[in-house]
Structures are given as C-alpha cells and as structure tokens.
Amino acid sequence: MSRNSYNNITSDKDSISPVYLFYGPDEYSKNEAIKKIEIKIINPETKEFNYNLFHIPETSLDRIISSANSLPFMSAKRLVILKNAEKITAAQDEMLNEYAANPSLSTCLILVGGEKLPKRSVFNDIAKKYPAKNFRNIFDNELPGYIIEVFRTRKKRISYPVAEELADLSGKNLYDIRNEIEKIVLYVGENEEIRADAVRKCCGNIKENRIFELIDYIVRKDFKMCFHLLDLIYLEGEDEYGVLNMISANYKKYHKYHELLKEGVSEFSILAKLGITYYKDKFLTNARRYNIITTGIILKKILNTELKMKSGYGCKTEIERLVFDLCNLCR
Image (cartoon, rainbow, N blue to C red):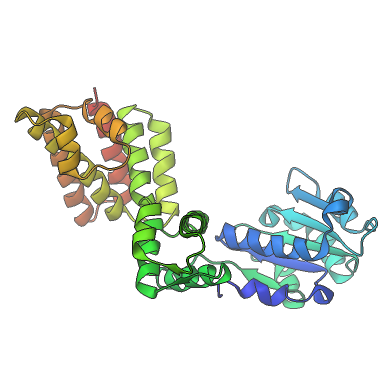
C-alpha cells in the first residue's frame, strides 16, 4: 500500500462510503485517513452533534450501532468511529453483519482495528463490500520517497540523498518524521530548497536520543521505564544489535571521559573531544555516576552480551539482562 493510498478512497465528497475498515500497525496513516474523511463530511460548527468516537469494549456494540443509525443534525452526514474493532467478539458478529448489510446512508461508520483483525467472516465480508485498508508499516526504502512527497505538499524541494539523511536521523516513526519536517519547514522559511545543512541543524538523531533516554533511566535504576523504552525502540524499527551498538557507544564515551579526566583534561575539553553537542549537563551528570573501573566492567559485559547474541542466545533476553546488570552497576 502506498503511503497516500487512502487519498484514493476519500477524493470525492459525494463518494464517501457508509462503512470503512481500517487496520494495520501504522497508526499515523490510519489517523490521517480518518482526518481526511472527517474534513470532508463534518462541519466544525455542528461537530458536537454529528461526531462520535467509541472504543470497544468500553462502549457496547449495540450502542455504537444505535448511534450510527441516528440521523445527522443540520448536516448531510454524521461520522461514527469505532476503535478496537479487533475486540468485537464472535457473539457480536451477527449484529455487525446486520448493520453492514443495510447501513445508514447518512452516516459514515469507520471501523478501526489494531495491527491485525480476527480471521472471521464478518471482517472478510465487510472488506469485500466496502473500502478496507491494511496500513502496514513503511519500509526503509520507501522513507526517502515519502519524505520527498511530504515536502512537495509544503511546496518545498528536497533531493533524494538529503531525504535519505533525514530518514536516517528520524527513524521509521512517521510521527517523528512529520515533526522533523515541520521543524525544517519553519527553519528554512521562504526558501524552497531543503539542503543538508538545514536537516542537520534542525534534527537531532532521534534514535540516539532514545538510547540516551534509556541510559538516563539505567543511571536512575528505573527498571520499569528501561524496559518500556526498550519496547518503544524496538517498535520504532531498531533491532537488538542496533540497541547494543548504541549502548556500547554511550558507555565507551563514559569510559573515555574518565580516562581523559584522569589525565587532567577539563570537562569542557572532554565534551569537545567526545563530540557531545546535546544534553551536555546530563551527559556529565551520568558520567560522574561511574568510575573508570566500573565503565571497564560494563564494556566487558557489553562484549559478552554481543558474543552470546551471536552464539544463538535470545537477543532480546540478553539485552534485557544487560540492562538489568547495568542498572545494578550504577552507584
């Protein structure tokens, strides 16, 4: 599915379907598709009366269907959004089937599922009869083209190599990419061309920032947030070896910090030598929580973790064990 394929099903106000089925892991694109439909059929002045957002199972399916069958107020259509469609039980399939067979033509009902939908006939039948989209995650090789297209909608030009650099800095999360694009657009002002220096000026490395956050929680011995952040990093497309490499890079800097400090180099000069340009105070605070002996032990643990991962041990398990050990080694 192309990133903008949902434009094809929302291009004409007169062809709005009474039912849509959206699912898949790409939450950003799902929400964008919903927004496009909302803009086309909902007047902001009467939104209060013609817009409903429900979540299964917090709201019963029969109540949602009742809302979908209600007439719009001072509007041609009403919009009803049902989220967590994958949580509709098999016992409720008949109710959903009945509505899908004879939907209210003055209502647009959007069924929004999670990453996957249950393999039941009700969803297959809806997908055959009405517009249905699986919003999969974007592939790495699609990111530059996606970035170029977004800048084009903002009347800006960006070359493929610079778009690749932005993709590398931003990661795969489309929310992050959009935020970085907005920052760049504001930075360049009326200039139409997006150059590499503007990208580097505006965009910190989000992947590295995530790892820096992780190190911060390790130093604070916050186990819960450490493992939550690991899940987020994996969700954004980083693999276990990437996580290990970035943890290693941070602790190598802490070790070098203590080596240079032992040689009498000032902290200001150490920051410059290590290329620390962001979060300088936080880097120093965290580095001071270790000593040269501890950082040496940590680097050996990181090496042992890499060897175990390459020997066929569970990669995520080994990363989690390493993070647990690092928390306990911080004073």
